[in-house]
Image (tube, rainbow, N blue to C red; front, side, top):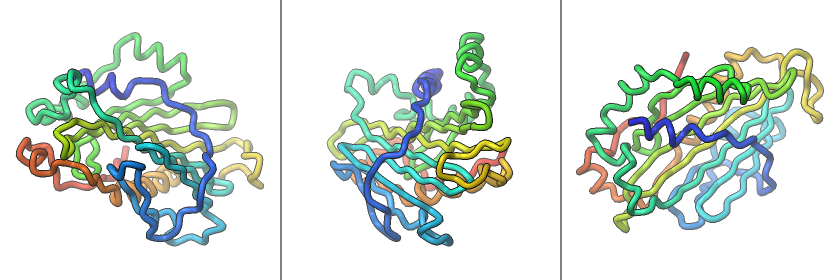
Length: 244
């Protein structure tokens, strides 16, 4: 079961703003092969367009999203879909019900090794947690890390891995890399007029709600639902906002 953690333990990429087109309400965006799509309505709901600047870029089986909420935080989302080599499928615990059923207990009892503690310290990671999420009908493995990038600037980063069998009898990996960066202690972004005055709790709640809107709209178009249901790998659950 340790494979779940290894899939999530690579160093997080630093988020960056990608150029592209503004998302429109109810706009459907998909990867090039149409394996996965999301609907962009949630990015605009309840706020004026000038207050929520949203960009996206899609190439191959990947979608990037980037948004700056003035004087509060910036948000970045990277959704990618890749095929699993046939000789690697047997190693993916989330593609087998007996192993997938043990994920919650595994994470509840998980303890970091000395190497992982040292690695976190070297990268400035102040907090980390591994847990289970449900996205697109799949049970997924999530890792969150909280870091101070520099004086007055911090980030909270999430990586989620989901796996499924497609209608061509192949296995695929959906990787979601999503994060927000914020300022505090008087530090402000170049284009902002002030440092964020929003509490960390309110900021995290806003970010998680934004992610829920995206993940609830996520559709996997090439999933072999019959096989996934037969294998006990299809779940009638939606993404839940975790409160720590």
